[in-house]
Length: 127
Image (cartoon, rainbow, N blue to C red):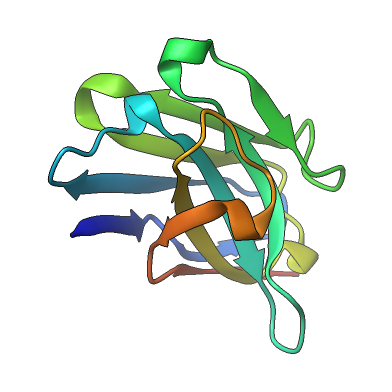
């Protein structure tokens, strides 16, 4: 069984910052071997891709959705099997449940390519 657990969500004012963490665990599991991604979902909307980072053995390629590029940064701590999403200059439209996901590919950006999902963490940005 593979587990992905997000943390770090909360309430923040517009212009503020939050850092989300994604801890992965399970038998024969390592984020070093898997592409990792962050998605978010607002009420009434589809779950959307926002950031991804490649498996460590393939380099440290990162990908971002246009609306968060330059404000959000995805990174990885291989020793801790943890992926982070640093979110700066937050806007009310960033309010959503944020999900971390792991893929059995060295890099993935499409929702269907991710096999393991966390339960999500709520991020609320007040104006």
